[in-house]
Image (cartoon, rainbow, N blue to C red; front, side, top):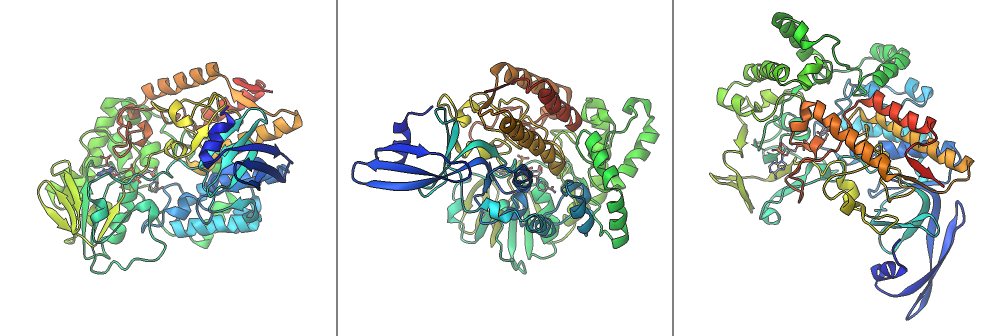
Amino acid sequence: MLPPESLCAHFGYLFAVRVVYRRGGKSDVMRTTRANVETVETEHHEVIVIGAGVGGIYALYRLRELGVDVKVIEAGDDFGGTWYWNRYPGCRFDSESYTYGFSFSKELLDEWHWTERFSPQPETLRYLQHVVEKFDLRGGMQFNTRLERATWREDSQTWFLEVGEGRTMSCNMLLPAIGLLSAPTPPRYEGMDDFGGESFHTYYWPKEPINFEGLRVAVVGTGATGVQIIPAIAPLVGSLHVFQRRPNWCAPLKNARISEEEMADIRSRYDEIFARCAETPGGFIHGPDDRSFFDVNREDRLEFWEWLYDQPGFGIWLANFREVLMDEEANAEFSEFVANKIRERVTDPVTAEKLIPKDHGFGVQRVPMETNYFEAYNRDNVHLVDISEQPIERIVPEGIQTTEATYEFDLIIYATGFDAITGAFDRIDIIGSDGRRLRDVWNSGPRTYLGVQVEGFPNFVMLAGPQGASVSTNFPRAIETSVDWATGLVAYMRENGLRRIECTAEAQDAWVTEVEQLYGMVLLRNARGWFTGYNSNVDGHDVKRHMIYNGGAPRYRRRLESAVADGYAGFVLT
Ligand code: NAP
C-alpha cells in the first residue's frame, strides 16, 4: 500500500486523511492542511464500473438487478463507448447485427428492429440509447469523469479513485470496462502540429458533419477502420490519397437491408441464434467447417471458397477449413485465392499487387470486412501511396512529405489504430496492494488469471481484460459472459460476507502459460498487428505480446465456470 505521503504529494500539500465509509452513500474526508482545514467528500460505492460502453451498460443493469450500490464513471460526455467515439463515415459492425444486441431481455429483443445486416454506427448508438432509456440506467452513470489514478488501500480494503479536478471516489470492487480499442494511437511524425488544414485520428471524428466536396483528403492507415472510410468518402471528396504501410487481407462484407419480414424471422429464432453463437469459437454464427482441408480435393475447395467469398460477414475467415488458420500450406493456398480476387477487382495491375499482403497470410491478422474497398482504387480521384517504398518523412504545413514528393491536403485522417487491450489500462495510474503500478507489471506484456484478475490487484476484476475471450471474440456475446461472471462474484462475496478477492501467482502463471501455448497452435502467432500487441506508435510495442485467449469462447466460458464450481479455484477470498 502507498504511504499516505504519496497521496499528499499528489495533491501538492500535506494533509491527514480521516475517512468514514457508509455503504451507498458519501464518506466525509477531513483534510488538515498546513494552511487551512477543508472538508471534501469522497463518494463511496460498493462497486464502481469504469466505462459506459457496451460492457459498462450491461454491468450496470446486472448489478442494479442484484441490488448492489453501483456507479459507472465515464470519461466522455455520454455513454456508448466505441459507438460514441467512432463516428467516421462507413463505421459499422462486422458482427451480424442480430448477434450484437444484448440477449438478456426478450422484450428488448422483440421490440428492436435492426435495419441492416451489419448495423451502421448511428443505429448502434441509437440502440444503446434505447437500452439505457428502457432500463432507466442513465442515472447510474457519471460522465466527464476520467479515472486518473486508482490506489488499493489495504487497511479499508477499498479502491481510492482520483477522477480529476481534485474529485475522489472509493469503492469495494472496481470493474474496468474500458474497452479494448479505446486508446487511439496517432502516428508520431514530425511536424504534425504544423499542418495547415484539419487533421485527426478516426477515434476523434468530429460530431459536426464534414462537407467533403472538393476536399483534398489523405487517409493514413489501411486497417479495418481505413478500409471502411476509404470507399465511403471516395465518391464525396475532390481527391483521396491513401498512405499504406502494409496492406491487409480484406473480404466483402455483403451488407444489406433487413426487411420487416426478415426481422420477424430473426426474432422468432433468437434462442437458436444465441445458442449457435455460444458454441462457435468466435462467438459468431460462423463456426469452422467440419471437413479437413486435406480431405477435400482442390476443385471442391475452390468451389467452397467461391461460395464463402459471396457470403455475408466473417464466414470467409471463421467458417473456413480450420487448417487455413493453423497450417502454412492451407493458408498459402487460400491466400492465393483471395489475392486473385483482388487482381480481378482492381483494374490497374500495379495497384492490385500493392494491395495484396506479401508478409503474412490471410486471416492471421484481424480481417477487415469491406464494401467496394478495392473498387475505390479504380476511381480517378483515388491514389495509393505505398509508404513502404516512399516513407513519410514529416508532416508539413501544406500536407505530407514523403521521400519522393510532397502531397498537398486540406484534411488528413489518421486511421492508425489503437494501443489495443492494455493501452487503456496503461493510461490510468493503477496502484496495487504492494505499491506496484499495473503498467509496470505489464511492461513487457500482460499477465492475468483468466483475463479477469492480476495478482497484486485485489478486488480489481476486468470485464474485457487481456488474455480473456472478450477481447478476441464477438464482443457483446463475450462481454455478457464476463459481466455475468463478475456480477456473480459480487453476489457471492456479499452472500458470504467476503471483502477481498485476489488471484494467486501460481494460477496466473499457469494461465499465462496456457495463453502462450495456444498462440503456438495458430498462425496468428506470426502476425504483426494488435492480436500480438505490435504498435509502432507506442514505445516498447515492437515485440510480441500474448494479448488474447486463442482457445475459443466455449472453452473460455468453461474455464470461468469451472473456477467457480471449484470454489473460485485460483483465487483467495477473505
Ligand atoms: P489497425 O488495424 O491497427 O490498423 C492501423 C493501420 O494504420 C495499419 O494499416 C497500420 O499499418 C497503419 N499505421 C499505423 N501506424 C502508422 C504509421 N505511423 N504510419 C503509417 N501507417 C501506420 O487499426 P484500425 O483500422 O483502427 O482497427 C483496429 C481494430 O478495430 C480492428 O482490427 C477491429 O478489431 C476494430 N474495428 C472494427 C470495425 C468493425 O467492427 N467493422 C471497424 C474498425 C475497426 P501496419 O499494418 O503497417 O502497422
